[in-house]
Every structure is written in C-alpha cells, then in structure tokens.
Length: 341
Ligand code: PAF
Image 1 (cartoon, helix red, strand yellow):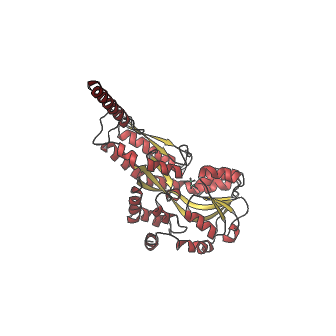
Image 2 (cartoon, rainbow, N blue to C red):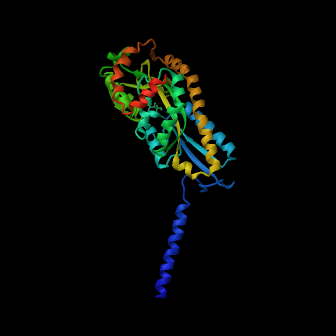
Image 3 (spheres, helix red, strand yellow):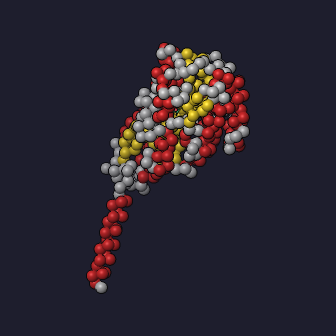
C-alpha cells in the first residue's frame, strides 16, 4: 500500500515537472512574461514576413519598424524581417498569423479575404475614386470596423498601407479595351472578386500565389498578370514575357500591417505597447514610399522595352465589371464606401 502511494506521488511529481517545462517553451519569446511589465533581461524575437523584394517599401518600412522597436525596448524585442515569401506567400502568412506561427505580416488585402471575408469590399474594381478618398476611408470608421472584424479572427490590424494601383501586363498584344482581354489567360490573386471581375472582362483568370506566378508566366501557363508598376519593375516582368502594360488602375491595392493576436498576448504589456505604436506608424510611411517610387517604376519599365498603354478609356472596363458589384455579400459596407466618396 505504502509502495503504491509512493508510486502515485512519483507519477504526480513527474507530471508537474513536464507541465511546467511545456509552459516554458514559447516560440516567440526567450522569456515568457505575458502579464505586467517585463523584467529587463527578458528578450523576445518576432518574425515578420512579406512577399516582396528587399528594396520594396514593405521591407524598408518593416526594417525601420524593427530598428525603432529595438531602440525603444533597449534591445528586448528583435524583429527579424523575411522578404520574398521566404517564410510563406501572403495566404500562408495570413494563416500563420491566425495560428501564431508568424508574428507580423504586411500583405495586400486580396488573400486575407479568405480569412476575413468582410475585407473583400476593398478589392472591388474601381471602388475608390482616388488614393485620397481611399486613405480617408481606411483611416476612418470603415477602416476601424474592418480591423475590428480582423480581430475576431485572431489578427490585429496595425495600420493601412498600399502597393499602388494594379495594372494589366501581358505578352500577347496591347490591351486597349475589354475586347482585347478575350481569352487571355491571366494570373490573378487568390480572391473571388478578382476572379469574377476578370471573367466579366472576358479573360480567363487563373488564381495562384505570387510564388508560382513568375514560373507560370515564363512557362506560358498564363499570358498575363495584374499588379502595380513597382511589382512589374522589381520582379523584372519583362524577362517573363510581359511586353505590354495597360494602366487600368482597376484596383487600388490596399495593404495591411498585421500582428498575430497570439504573438501579442505573449509579450509583456510595456513591450506590447511599443510594438503596437510602431506598427501603427508603419502604414503611412509605407504609403508615402510607394507614391514616391511608382513613377520611377513606370520609367524603368519603359527603359526595359515595356510598351505602356497610358491613355486608356476606363469606361468600358468599369461597365464590364459593374455586374460584379451585385454579387458582393457585404452590400451595406460596399454602399457605405461608395457614399463616403
Ligand atoms: O499579386 C500579388 O500576389 C500581390 O500583389 C503581391 C505581388 C504578392 C504583392 O502584395
């Protein structure tokens, strides 16, 4: 009996040791102090991911944020920045945020709608009158409401960025009107509205992650793609058969700086506040950089032999995608955006 009791006590003690050891093994932190202010020797490492090159404003802004956070936390928080989809393409990165396997992400909204469907209203073609009205809406009540929706999926919206206006490139012929898109195989983002819009325009949309798009263009799986000029320039799309770019500006490509709620919860309160504040500043800085670099990118594309179709009559494009508006699930939100401009 005595032996049995001793055996039980031993097993209980062993279980307690295992539980204590497991609760100490957080990925994000070398220390683990989720409540109150941290002890000065606790150090935390956050992984920040995105899909664009090192000289893209997504990366430049994340590096600046990392620097500021490091300085303000006296080196207690290190942000490691991974460019070029190194730790996942945008959809995977977003999933990582919900799971807490990625801490910080900047991504276009399109793939995030697969997790937060309300965001889909931002990807409706020609929904924003111009950049100024778009920023006003995102920085106002509507943007706040969308960030609240993201919160329900375990993602903290830190700030609104952008990647510029999306334009169509292709390797077949100049596109001047929707008829020229007929039958063109176009890579789109993994987003239902983008797919519906390009179907309505007569093209053959093929959704795929950006990590597959370049090979798709090079191997002729797709003839066309649509992205802002900075993407066409930095990924040298003219080396992937893209000879023509039509400045349709059909979507103002909204981006978001985001943090995983799970990662946030692992930080002590004083450090959380600093990461949050620096993340909130990132969007506006990033937007300014895009505006600065957009014209330069168009010039570089021209210098590399891309024919830019600048004088485009947008009305037939706008008319062709109009039926897509009625298919949007969040009509009230959509109309709010339209009425606010
Ligand atoms: O086309 C895309 O997937 C996106 O625009 C990109 C290039 C990953 C930037 O957010």
